[in-house]
Image (cartoon, rainbow, N blue to C red; front, top):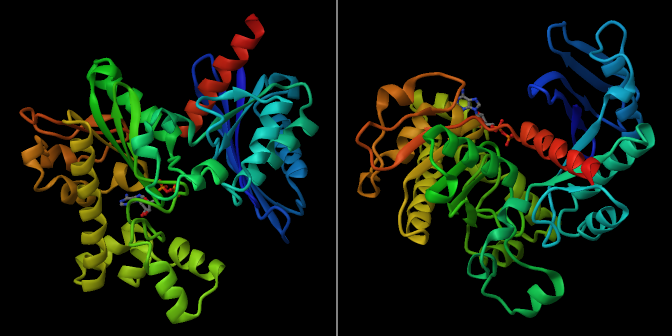
Amino acid sequence: MKVLVINAGSSSLKYQFFNMSNESVLASGNVERIGMDSSIVTHYPVDKPEVREVSEILDHVTAVKRVAEMLTHPEFGTITHLNEIDAVGHRVVHGGEAFSSSVLVTQAVKDEIRRLFDLAPLHNPAHMMGITAVETTLPDVPQVVVFDTAFHQTMPNTSYLYPIPTVLYRRHKVRRYGFHGTSHSYVSDQAAEFLQKPLESLKMITCHIGNGASLAAILDGKSLDTSMGMTPLEGLMMGTRSGDLDPAIVPYVMNKEELTLSEVNSMLNKHSGMLAVSGISSDMREVTEAMNEGDKNAKLAFDMYTYRVKKYIGAYAAAMNGLDTLVFTAGVGENSVVFRQAVCEGISFLGVELDHARNAERRKDAREISTEGSRVKVLVVPTNEELLIARDTYRIVNQVKLQ
Ligand code: ADP
């Protein structure tokens, strides 16, 4: 079975095409600047040179058609006919309380995703355009949706409720949902497999640290708590997002600076975090480089960033009454040696002991970076959200065929 995985944004569409018999990627690519001048399609077929095309792509239907043409192109395609695409899996950011696992797309599922537009106004409408575009271009192909929030639906109400008037939860569903669930789920499974232990037997913290960043406390194989909240703004300090702050700062700053709701929203989401504190960049590589050259603000940004991760690890260890596995993943978590060192330093009381030589190794596979004697196993596990989406899609479509 061959599965196409799509991550549709408002003006972009990323894709990966899998052969599920061996879970290999046959091709991948992205369409950028949908609806703008000079849209760009970049297609990476495995074992063939990449193809880059500039054309006018006004909507998602045209974008999916271009992807289909790329996949079946006589020269750089990987299949000869569209009927070789057996299923399509979509990433959907918000599944609200309605979805605690991936599901086959039906009319009822689409209606529910539409009802959730309010909770993820930048993401869910774009995902919906992707789903509709596939319906138009590949009308007979079953589609599955995989939600970023689904993995965290196991959180108890002590984790997901905010201490504000409960009417806000009842009326408007104001609660913690959490995000990066696909990644937390994938790396926690991989970590358990690496350790050759059942996930249910582990007290695990997974740290997904990329441009966006979140931690999850995983107990009995289930998400007990996670640092992102109703939106992906809460929790850790991120590339351009503030993460946790005193909520009273928002009205105070709005008043002092005469900011509108949309301006303050943009300040907290796009102009805060590492970018604001370093004054240099939201990118960990650039901040680390500046810090190594002696830039004080870059050092402060790095120190605040790592300090906040460390605080959450302590909090989640307390929430689980213990910790035996700590996992790093995503751009920063997988690649930054100094980041992992700064986070793990000074938490030996929890049983975390980093092996500096192992931590410094540059490898692409799942690996242990703690010392032999470390009570907590510290692992680096590369995330692969697309593969998890492909696996869920494959499983669900096969189940439906068997019914
Ligand atoms: P996104 O959340 O957009 O998927 P990624 O998971 O790709 O983000 O992570 C992007 C972050 O990873 C950037 O801050 C980048 O600097 C960092 N990063 C990527 N490679 C390295 C590296 N070799 N060393 C340090 N940081 C890195």
